[in-house]
Length: 357
Image (cartoon, rainbow, N blue to C red; front, side, top):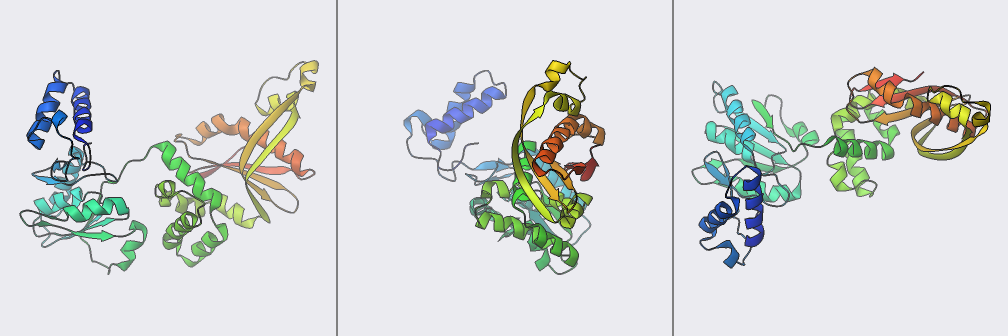
């Protein structure tokens, strides 16, 4: 991606790398020629950073300003815009909302195919908003309305029946990024506030509010918080796992422990054959961090969040049964004489609590 402010020599290298990856046999020559056409001079002889016009990114039959904080549009977004327009062909003067708008490419694409559409493009990121506003009015009467806002709360400002179509082609996250955001939120979440919101029917507002609180109090980094999947948090709050949390006398989060256990106990927890008597007496150091330990007057319960994308409950049990069995033994030792009477894996992917027996 060649963006505004890029030095010509850096832009030359980026274009050459992209052409090489695309299989162009003369990538170095072709890159130099492309940049020469844009700059009017050999890129190796130009020293001023690229302007917005020079760094413009083609989309359909127009060009967009791009830069830090936005993703360059791809051909699949053009397909989404065309498909959306097809859904509106029988709708006079349609009203369209584009969520997570970024550069505004999708909303502008819908507007190009449906000139009489009124398109509002919503974006939360201040960095992306710069480019959304810059692209909001393009030559040829191609205009959209840029709005700064959060998709989880903006809909509440709209009268019922206000929209004919909602479109979105948001940034894609890796499983690791999504998992980090979910774990960070649950580590610091105000469970009492979420429980009250669930009771009041206001979870849609409470989840983003809690996310923002964590950022404001510097509990979670903004770049992590913005990747939170609020839908998965909602399912968690509505789950049996959350009900168990609310019923506990005390909730211990991220409980770190390190303890020595007999080898026989460790092997039994892992489902391994019993060792010889001498080995059984040996001590094994067990260390870990339990996501949630629930303390009740006469027992303990152990819950563990999992964000990985396994397909079935059996897959989770095969992967994590031994871990939770070991954690339970170590926690019982710490809280003796109380026993762990329930062990559960909450899959944020499946939205289910899976009992470990």
